[in-house]
Image (tube, rainbow, N blue to C red; front, side):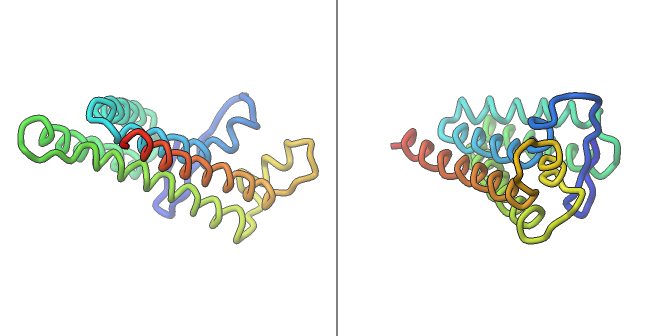
Length: 168
C-alpha cells in the first residue's frame, strides 16, 4: 500500500476479485464515511469508531510502503488519541464531532475524487478504465465513474438522512 502527496496511491494485490477490488478505493472511502457519520450520533458508537480507526491506522502503519503514509498514520493516531483523552479527562467533548468531520470529509472527498479522476478527465490507467476492461458490459471508464459517483453520493445522502433520523 502506498499513498503519494499528489492525492494518488496504489495497492498491489495478488489475485482477488477485480470487480470488488477496483471500485474499493472510491466506494470504500464513501462507505467508511457513511459509517463514521452514523457512528457520530452517539458517544459510545463514536468511541467504537475511534477505536477501530486507531486499530486500522496502527495496522496500516506497519503495512505502508512509504514514509508519507506512515507520517499520515502517526499524525492521525496522535490526533485521535489526544481528542479521545480530552474527551475522557476534561470538559472538552469533541470526539463525536471529530468522528463526524472525518466521516463527512471521507464522503465528500470520495464524490469529488470520483468526479475529478474518472469523469472530468479521462485517465487511461484509472480504476474505472481497468474495471471497464474487465467488465463484460459495453460501458467505458467514464460511465463507470458516473455509476460509482452516484453510489458514493447515495451513501452520503443516506448517511445524512439516517443520522438525522437517529438524532431526532
